[in-house]
Image 1 (tube, one colour):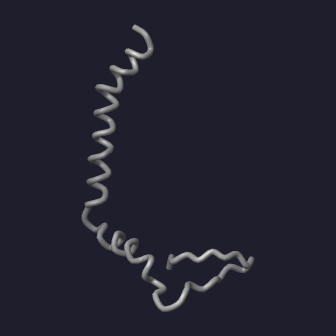
Image 2 (tube, helix red, strand yellow):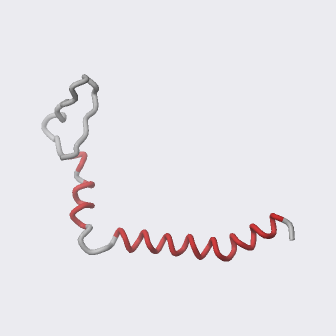
Length: 69
């Protein structure tokens, strides 16, 4: 059996099963109970400093502005 056929069989069977299980796992992780707070917090990042820009607290003078609290 050549390499192409072996890889094709693997991709058609086990790799498809693995990727499907990974997809279902990600969906379960996103919709798990208790994750709503984190998602809402992430969704509101652009609106945290609505009236003025974030302060530049970096001592080196770099212009990094993060909205993390």
